[in-house]
Length: 215
Image (tube, rainbow, N blue to C red; front, side, top):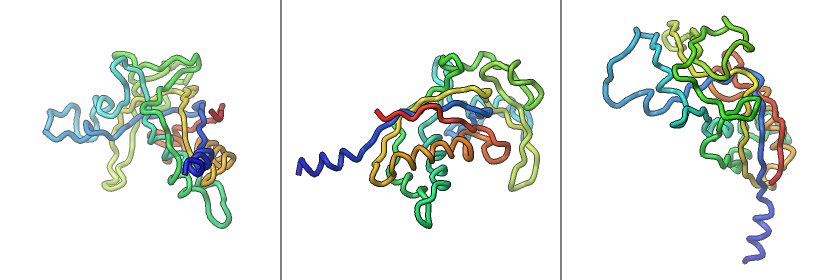
């Protein structure tokens, strides 16, 4: 029995992945604070709440920004849809075996330092300031369209400018998904899928894979 277990464990691979953000990363997390159980006093007007970002940002007590492992799990899974396997693809296989091991994935800048949100943060209207003049993180104001009502709303989201970095650890069964196919899925996730908010509408959250190291 122990021999069989050791054979199965030999199939389990672990890798550290490092990515470099090529597009703006927008954090708009839909957590419990987004829909509170009790009614609270509203600020602004309907469709325009300047403090909206406070309910959707992911940051710790020191205001360091982070992402949840589900962000990269979902991106890599959908990246697997672009990797062919016979007449199908790797989406279901990746979903069945992939684990992102980190509880919180901290976002770093080009100097490999954790990115903190300034207090108070700078408020910037989308597209009005060049990236080189922006801080690492700020609150972006952008107009969006509600798909159900067709009404235009104003979104206030914490964003990180291009050049951001993340490192995280993954675990998977190489019999279910071979190493090369999984690496390709991650690369395609960065160029075709992205993470965070605004992925499909304005192409936010795209990244390049700078390291894929088996541990």
